[in-house]
Length: 384
Image (cartoon, rainbow, N blue to C red; front, side):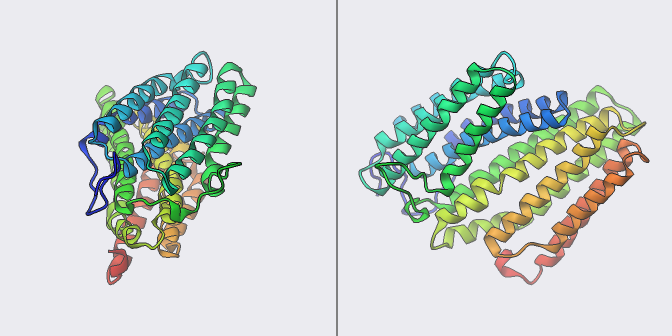
């Protein structure tokens, strides 16, 4: 039965067209992040991009939780989502210059997304555990919002430190149950979610990230067509297919079944999906940057930044997927560990080989992990 604007829990909950429309803004956000990292390919640029990626992910994942509880096809919920979508568009537009002149615009848009959406959730929720949980979430959104706005008003290193504190508060909140004076603390069992729906939402965000990688690959090749660029295109596409296959071959569907049947789906939703999908998304974003660099400059000397992107992107993805599998099935696949070790070892080739050769080695490593994972799944019905 529906209670107000809450989703029905009477059957399987599928992602709605409203949610898919909402995600379009985050296609733009992922594109902006990859361009930001490409233009600031340094340790500091990587740290800044990570801070902003965390904010983008947090704005999106909390909305995914929101639409898990509240029916996106209800007019009141849809209006909130449209407002959040507009604020997310402003936030995404500000990303490339967030650490210079657009800091306050980015911070204000992000805080608006988090606070307005959560406040509407509190107002719409019926009295009981869900409303109390959402009130705690709102309190933490306001707390981190203070640091986001203060950082937007600051400049240089103070902005980075204040935003790091804000991200720290955002990351800490779920692990301490959004503990709030006067409101208590939430348990994961209080998060009465539809696990399969949240799993599907996170899988769709990964598709968004892969879509950005494909767009970058095709767009860069179109701008610089040549036989060697074509080889780089094939290499980049092969890496994307390998990473996609590693996750979507069957662990995505099997993970959905596990969380749907779990006694405490909120616990898995927090660890396996809210947190451990983030390194996979980051890995695809970094790989998209690597694809553009290699297709644009496939020959010659391999710069350290290029090598870090070529090897670091797949390593991040494989690490995230290994941790995801550990959270869901209680074990880390050795193929993933081997892949990460090989990618790290390939760093020694950086001074010796051109970018295309290094990328080809990375793609071969990813392909090997994908094949090994597919073979290991045979006869393991629990993982599909």
